[in-house]
Image (cartoon, rainbow, N blue to C red; front, side, top):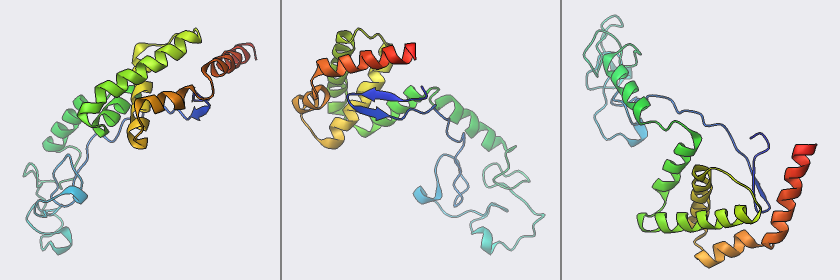
Amino acid sequence: MKEGLILGYQKHRVENYREPPTVIQCFKCQSFGHTYHNCSSVSKCLRCGEEHNIKDCQKEKIQKKCANCQGDHIAMYKGCPAYQKARLEAKETAPKTYAEATKIQITNKLPKTEKTNITLFCAELIRACLTKANISIRSSDILSYASHLAMIHFNLNVKGEELFEIIKNPPLDEAVDRAKKQATEATNG
């Protein structure tokens, strides 16, 4: 989708999903899965694995010891067994598509009590609009768009009726006619 997605009168940029870096490593404690901004652990040296900052390390550069596996390499070494294990775990839990990543991200932001109701409400609105426009798309895409609308709903803190007014304003028939015209121009042009 190079041009993007049009919902109502708004055009939304659509990008291909890019997988995040497979392993995040903390440069404070050298562990995997978090960054130093969120670390409450004791500092460990990248070079020798002991409890001090690398700037304060008294060991010679040739005396390496991993803080994670105690091997004779620095903690950032990509061949480290602890790194390889963390990499496999990250790959198994990483979303495979943009839609999965978006769903996870949006779902985590919404309060649990509102998630299902608002998302389903938005999905029904989208389905109704698409049916009226005689447009067919996959249910997973409808749910993805519905999740986006649910997030807008949550961020704007509007009631369901107000959300419906936002979506159907300008009138639905005009939006449907314009969408049909754009689709015809795109296929003929």
